[in-house]
Image (cartoon, rainbow, N blue to C red; front, side, top):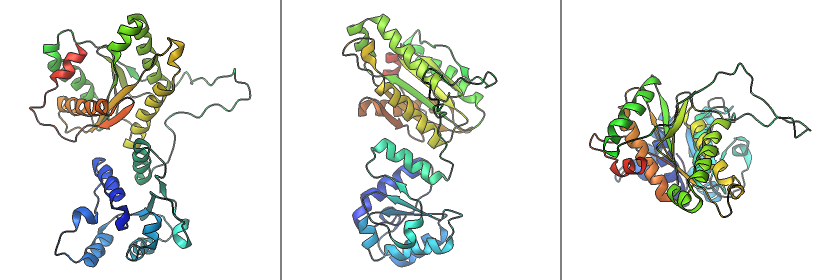
Length: 332
């Protein structure tokens, strides 16, 4: 990664999110140690790197040493066939010359969640195909697009309930562990929890609370469905994506939260406000299923700590001693 000294914070944020998504990144702030020769280390990094990320700002374009760094990557791939250099714009700047011809990832004026999604999608090198079908462009608003009857149905798991909180750990290990094992490979596991659901029930009644939960469950069905999904506990939903890459899965999380956030809840009751939190992790066939669940719960707890409509990835590893008793109480 190449960046100006003024953009060090941006560069570290980018590197952190890429490594969390399991990319390997070389960045001066973390990898160059006192006593090393800066020029030689940059030379070595440019030779070994599959791609060079240029953190774009006006200070980057005006800096002295950033020019040969991106020029070296450009000379290796002048036609852009291998996407050897990927510019990432973080601050306003005026691109000129050959650098202007390279398509960049634009993080300007995005919130953190959108910026992270744009970053991961941009470096993936994949098509930017939307996760949901575009609206049918009919001039008649009464005509609605319908799914083909031949379209394969996803597996929907019925509502799960923990009857005894003291058996919660074994319950999660068995039910979710079995579902995760069924994927037989890589995937993403998500938990979505409605914030302050007990307060909604107290203020508006259980009947309206159930209607809120049913609306959210229907939202899961309306956008591109995960492979396995359903309810667990009174106000928590889960989903398993075995056919999504990270950018597609994250886009799905963002879409569902945006739908919940923008829904006209006041149609159900005046002053009704609903928000949710999402925790998720990537897993593979080597993962221990109950630890996948534990990691996801950590992500969910962190998302809830951030406030409503937040998404947070759980850690890549959690020890055997990890416990989630407080979450079990919430589900019981």
